Image (tube, rainbow, N blue to C red; front, top):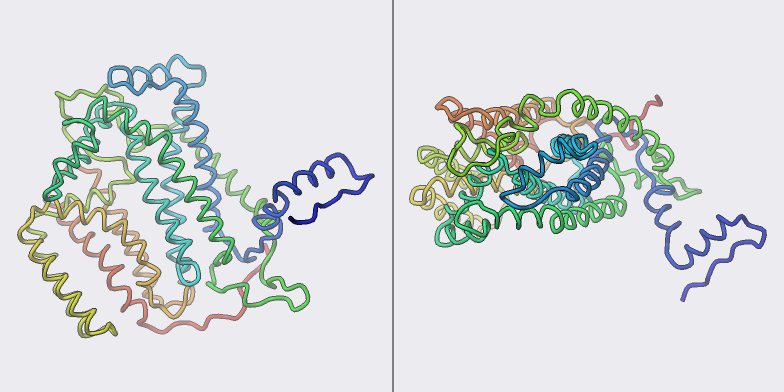
Length: 467
């Protein structure tokens, strides 16, 4: 047993109380390890606001969710009315509901920007692979949480959006129909679906989400934060103190620094809540203010904006597109065979897998492959630490045309999102297919294009200008 610390006899009561707690729980140790004595790079910029903002929005969603659950009724006959009751009768209920609905979109905005920062500065590279994997798992769980929460208002778009998405699982060969029934708990979206989605949205998934966030932060503080230069500050230690010469304590410097981002975020967040909570139908669709009617299908069904890039890929995966995917798969295997350092056994395995895929593309319904493409578009993020073969981490020291590639990736992602919201059309379908090919090409061809070009020399110390 560790030796108990003793506070001086004349110490203030607060010091004695803290010593008493420290002897039984590592409160001061945790504070020092994760805030007071955690050294972060001194050159954090604007892009490093979004990690703390994501944590802030998570707290907003949990707190507002607790208050909403006090009045919400997970019953198909009463769910819509209970939401209207919250909006019209519960004191400040409208504010809590709008904070929660706006918070859902805000969560995805800050998470997308947080992930893009990691993409730009190579925050997924060694030794931070596990941090990135935990982050991708958070993103995946967040999508599930948002999807299940979207059903709860029991409006027209909630009902039919869930009907469409759950029906996609029926395209899986052999087990599809039974799987979709198991997910719904019924043959159609019904009271059973609402109840199970409610329990998962309120209890199960948030617990997993919070656990992953804790794991993400612990892994981050174990290896240290990345920075815009992509330099490990632990490589340059002060010989006297043993502390990073290019680092500063997270508290008070970055806790105060992040308060600026929090203040700006809360001003924008409040402006949306009070002046444009529906955000023109993007945050809250107008059809969702109509009670769910299983007998009346809306003329155009689309998910919330943060799902639309992936939904666009799903819609673009048609029978004709299967031939394009077959050709692209064959070309990718040829590239692996002739322009990679894989072993002969792995090359043969990739060729066999490609042959199976091509046969599947041409024989299994395109609806099934649309579900696979949609899922793979998210799962491919997990492989990013091993796909990027660039000799440098940060985009600052990569060739100029690499920046063009990242810009095109963002552009195509936004275009996919836009066409995922629009009603189906031949032009939109073609653009979605082009965007899907570029999206996957960006990642799958990264082992080759990330190594090409003239790279700038990376300095031994971080670049920092006081401000």
